[in-house]
Image (cartoon, rainbow, N blue to C red; front, top):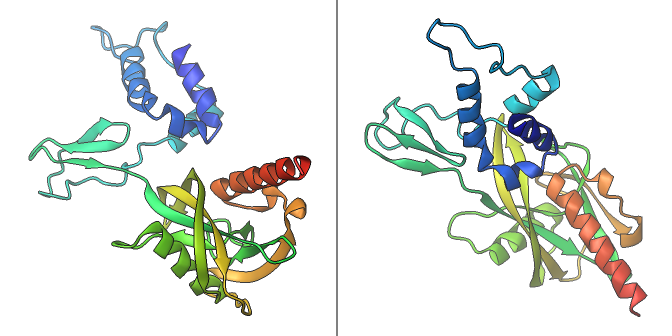
Length: 239
């Protein structure tokens, strides 16, 4: 029952972040249920058989460090799962944690209250709508990061930033799934013409009431659009 509950709940993609600690539990439970008896056979009552869909879900929920086979400190191949977000080297004891990367999202509005929206030029989610932003560089603050990304992608210079909220996301890059923490900022920019560049194929201004979350390919951006629309609706209702 516990196994079934986890696989079904994992099907709802964002639930993995909330249930990540169950990853190791489910692996251990699977091993126990499928453990061979003294006669070398798997007891029929204990054997776990999942539908193909559930099996694929389980594959999709692989350990985030499954591509790392060697210890980055000593190079040993004795590098196994420590918990749901780390691996530990059995040779030197080094523990490598898979923590989320910092990324920024810029929300820019014009005098008419329209939001500046980008169209993604590259995978993942190529061709879908997005908001300007990207990964923070080392030794860079989130505020510096969002200013840099906005200028690189739109040509606009940011005068002021205001932190709003954050949403966790999963971003597939070069075949590896990266976990990110996307920080949303309201950004005030200097007057100027927009120029789509870098990872952006197109820029357009869209009224906030006309934004559709399903048009945005990245999970965090889609959720962010829903939150922005809800906030705008509440503000309008309150006058």
